Length: 352
Image 1: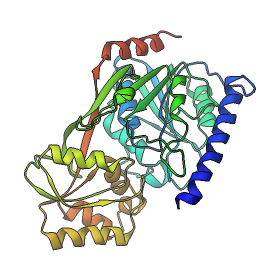
Image 2: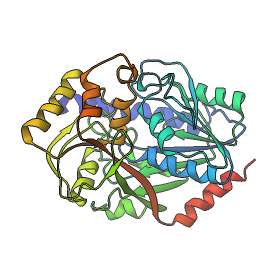
Image 3: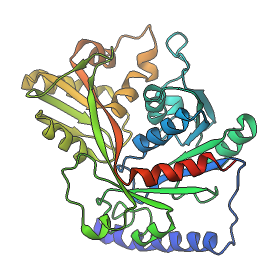
Image 4: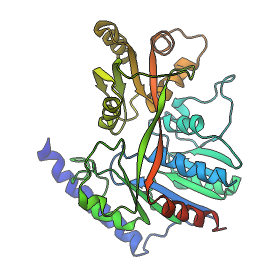
């Protein structure tokens, strides 16, 4: 496989270099919008904590009474149209929203962000530039946050935030995880090192380039009724489809939870009937105390079209409602140079 993918990685590197050169030298112009634009991104293919960091800065702007729009792609959704959802939207009666039409990350924002003094819209579109132009023209936000925007150079930004976790590797896609060479971190306005659950040793040369550091904090484990539980000392069947499953494994270990079975799926995995039956079968066979997953996986299941249909009776609902299924809810916390980070955000608030 390496014999095929490594040459393709060199080709990919050349394409990325040419594209960035065209932007850097001004041959391709970036679109500027009439609001403060903040990009939150990474160098690798997922797993660095973009979603919880977007939550963190969105919460900051809402606290200050700003009107915020979050732009995201909505990976693996079935439609390519632009969807707009406002925080506080009640989906319980009509069930107009599902993971098939807005993706899983949008549901995480809707569940975790509280609309305080400001207003927030989540805008989902395959073409982020078109989604951003649409949102600016129709809603006129003060702050626009581009989720996974580091490589999206069509759109000019006032603040480029790059998250790294020391797990990016050295090879570009498809041989490795990198979407562009590591040296391209120089394009960022601030580099933030995500220590995740603090159990990893970050290479010194990477840590020295960070302008700030953050980490994950486990809030608790919750079921579909939002009931929380202390799982210390419990045995669990674990499944997840995220960019960095090892981080989830580390969090379980640090909280004294034994994963008697740990099932990894691809990022944004859409669970089949056979997947769910296998999870239930492992739970019954290994006599675990609980079944655990991430919030990202839980919202993907709980808000899928087949579950939201009140007339359907299926194995998805059995797992959600008839088994002790819990998801881990985490938040981001800045633990080093937080004053510097918030000073940059304050500047964005004062741009217009």
